[in-house]
Length: 271
Image 1: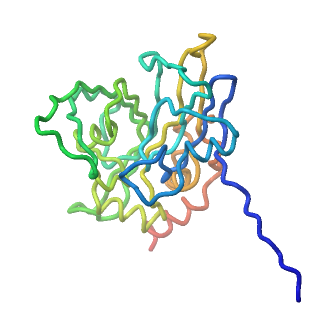
Image 2: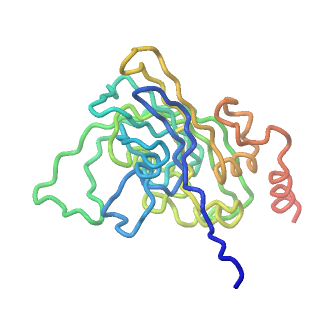
């Protein structure tokens, strides 16, 4: 009989952005849950479990990112570690429908929305104050009739949530009529489908690209960045937006003239 060959699959791991004796930061991909949730009872992959197995020690998430959001995810490696989130500056990138103002603030209170598996409270809690600052980085207008107009406008925005309400960025951008592309709950299906068909994008175009905060032990200022990658980077290249972003957020992007952008221009402007 021929010898039996056993296949050994390498364990899954997460890119480590920063690590010391008390903290570890990873780059969470879009589609990965932070921890086990009744919202996805049949899911078997979680960032907590993957990182615990990867490091061989317990880890404790210090915050959460939505399943569809990618970027910097911070863990404590010692129990009881506390981070004062009022001192943390969180920076996100998003692609949104339309052209928002160059900059502004969204000061709009948000009620707590229970997930599908949660029982709604008999007496709803009052809305909590919520504040998001935004800055428009780049825009485009595509010759594609998605809605009732012959062209469609999109923008790349930098978002900084001052408060930390559930789904705050997605809900706030919907509130000002500039929903995030790829948001199946708060976005626009027609625009999401156009990005899937034209850019092969099947994710929420929202990423936490940077955290700035004083280290909870040493108090030294710390900056952790997670460059955009994959489908998000492909959209940035296709729309020619590389020059609108700091190089630290673009390690997965090609700074040269994008072939994808060239093909896109040929398809819509010449064909």
